[in-house]
Image (cartoon, rainbow, N blue to C red; front, side):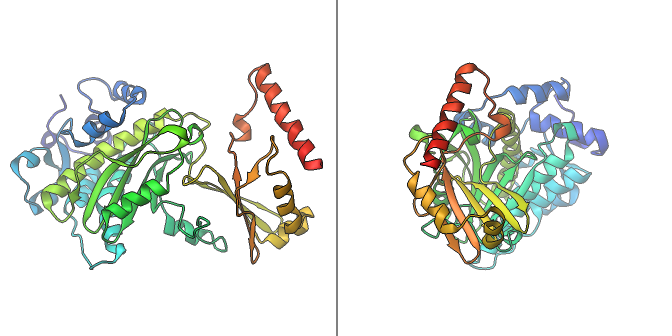
Length: 391
């Protein structure tokens, strides 16, 4: 059993070992052994729910000031012990930082979920040694939009955004979790989780059974799992935690403990992904002579969105016009061996070209044939594609 938190100064390697102990559920065995067990773990939805809501494996370090600032029921209080160090401070901030409420504006919900959940996930990851970290990357759709400059918000043909409000990735870009935020309706946020993740494919998620998620609205927050369903679709989000009211100290303490377990699920999720999984929901960028290319692997439908800007620079460089390219997609729409434009694309708005392409395949570095049959299929598709283009 791990030593009581109060008996350990939480600095340096001791802090890291302690974190590994209560995040990974270690006992007297080395941290590396427990990490190996977690990498081999294959949690299903029911196990994930039990992990998220079960008691912590050891007492959780928290700053003295934070522990004295909140009043918790004795059963909850016993899960926390006063400590010092960066991690204890981060947990204290997650539990006890003031949460302002400003009416119905969604910005106040964003602040709440960042203080209680997102910033704590980052602190947990940073507290571990580099070899044990996820390398967690946090992004929000609003931030993404600002970085695209002329590439405006990614929307469906119906005009609704296709990117989640927030997402968590590993350093390799693979999607580990996503979340949605609304001003008041948690049900609306959960609906967006499903709508923006309607497609499920092993190209994105390997053989994982579900993607961890959470939704927040007003002062409420709840964790969910979106699992694979039949026909390449994703199921409706299923709650794997109670609904927490973050203005209630007891609920907020439960949410903090669930966030710590949520980090554990993210680590297990990362270990399950194959090396060649596509970065779902990620924007991959490249540049050419005077133009920028972007490729987004959409999760609301199974398609990749390609965007070019400015189109005039690209057209001048490659010698192709929009009308000719749109005609080529239309003429080859039913031909095998080619990618196809989704109905309603390509489009040209001003100097921004956009097309949604299907079907998806592996990245070229991961698509080398391993057998003679695979090589035969590759050549079959290549030759039929060339024949369709030249007809």
